[in-house]
Length: 163
Image (spheres, rainbow, N blue to C red):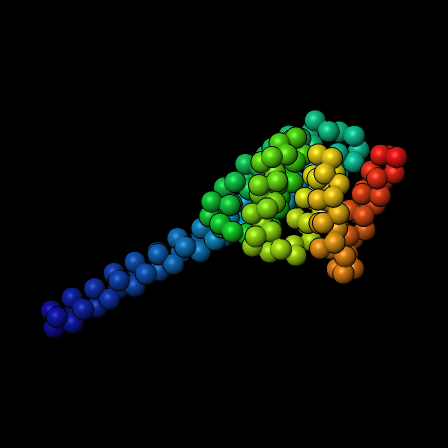
């Protein structure tokens, strides 16, 4: 009888440990997803403010998003969407070298990522590397997407200004 009781108690303890361990791993996953979703929301709010000319307020939101994205990136290493937004927030802050590094990391994982290719193209335009922006445009050429159209328009406008 004592053996059965010890067995049952041991089984219950092991089960509880297994449940606790699975809760922790799912909470890490949920945590990085929540960080990413919150950051994405902050970026979208920042874009709206920026379109209204409220650049300083937008930059504050981008900075908050950047901090959340760094945390998400620690837990979900090698996620091209997170790397894309890390690049975006840094580019908006004028930290072009750092932004480019995140974009390039994302492209190593997913070379045809529409957002990264568009935003990296925009960074290349901003840093007067139109040929490299055209390379990003070539990647997007057959996507039939708004990213292609927006980058093409920016390139065309910048090429016209050069002449």
